[in-house]
Image 1: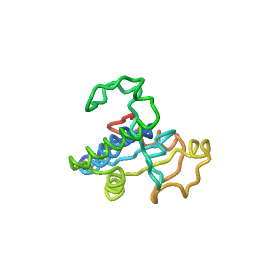
Image 2: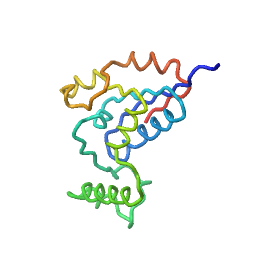
Image 3: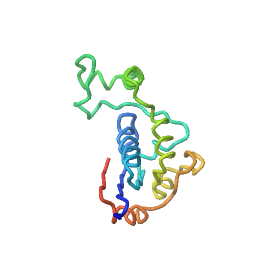
Image 4: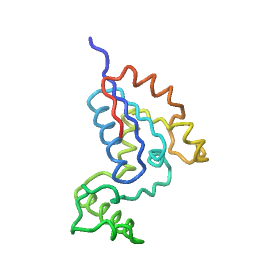
Length: 156
């Protein structure tokens, strides 16, 4: 009998578009029988907050498909990020894509361990009560302990 495969993910981004990969990959790996741990650090901590207000960021992401060509200068105008976030959420809903909240719950149900970087929590003066239930708080050493034996390690 073989050992259970492991997947370790480091999540560092806190925007709507970057919140999807760790939750989709983590929940999929768990469904395939992997033991999964996601280490959320720096801006990735936003993905674990109780009150999500994640926005899409198109600046610095030239590969983002837009319904019409949009120069970078226009993307920097006030209100554009809100407009693009609204458009993206609407498109996702129309295509039946699960929300970040739904994907987080799916990960929790699949027993994906979600670890918040304690150093970053302290750095940004967050309180553990700011985060959803079930989040573990630990340092990088905890991540290395798991990732050191992982079959797959991803940096997102």
